[in-house]
Amino acid sequence: MDQDPKRKYHEPVMTREIVELFETVDGGVLVDATYGGGGHSRALLSAYPDLDIIGIDRDTAALARPTPDRVRLHQRAFSELGELLDELAVESIDGALFDLGVSGHQLDTAERGFSYRDPGPLDMRMGPNAPHSAAEIVNEWSQDDLRRIISKYGEERFAGRVAAAIVANRPIADTAQLAEVTRNAIPAATRRTGGHPARRTFQAIRIAVNDELAEIQAALETALDRLAPGGRCVVISYHSLEDRIVKRTFAELAQGCICPPEIPECRCDRTPEIRLLTRKPIGPTPAEVEANPRARSAKVRAAEKVAA
Ligand SMILES: C[S@@+](CC[C@H](N)C(=O)[O-])C[C@H]1O[C@@H](n2cnc3c(N)ncnc32)[C@H](O)[C@@H]1O
Image 1 (cartoon, rainbow, N blue to C red):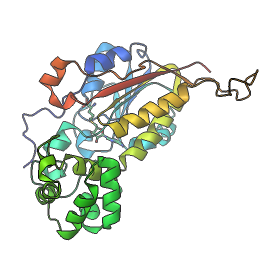
Image 2 (image 1 turned 120 degrees about the vertical axis):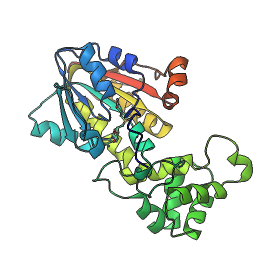
Image 3 (image 1 turned 180 degrees about the vertical axis):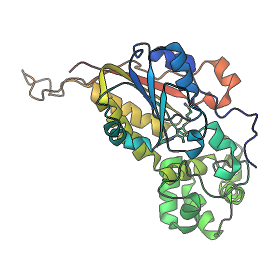
Image 4 (image 1 turned 180 degrees about the horizontal axis):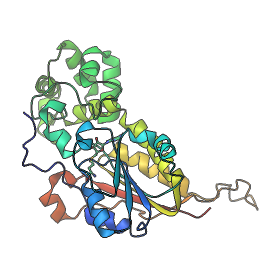
């Protein structure tokens, strides 16, 4: 069934915090790299009346809706940010926002195949240019490759058992069958803990379908590179694999001299490219989690470009 038309496209997460973190951006250009339903963009536009936004989303559904005046929206993977800015003749940007993962609309539309709760096709592509479909991965990849992604991208400790069960039950017809096969592969005692037993496997397949982690790494590097001095990059991540990439990338660029302490003078000539605005990630308030359970795992990290 398609999404209930009365249901909101996406409930944006930690909007107040995001608007505050961009307090320096008014009068500039901000890239909303994960435009979705435009909830964050709209809040930023109303807080900062002289802000212009370049929106990006790879999903056709996100592009099919009316966009506010000060938003130029483009259907791209955010790893193509550099090419897009070149095409638009935008040399530097004043802000970059990444609200990672899938939108409420994607999760709630059973035909997209993201949900382990509602039956749908094995798709999980965030946009038409995704490198794979879930059907291809589930029904064609080797058991070893399946085990590898389920372990790495799902951090599923029973990845070997799940991969073997998938291969033994091929062809798998839809998400309902995949959820069932996965559930049965997890030992009964574990099934009762830590949420739905198929959650980790679905996350893993979704990450592989959309090459999500490589996307994040590439786009973050470009965004930080293209920020003007004083410009800010803010990232909302939802699981440890995403957050690890953000944390490492920020830490590396925030690091100054790396010469050993016994060397009297610096030889590396490294100076920090960014300043961390969040030493520890910011999380949602309990009230927000209660109102919007999808905010539960959100972690926000932010950094500011330092003058060269
Ligand atoms: C969590 S939602 C963002 C919601 C948005 N902040 C709002 O307020 O409505 C993530 C969105 O980013 C898009 N997305 C995820 N990865 C992407 C990528 N690599 N390139 C472009 N868009 C991506 C998804 O299609 C989805 O619409």
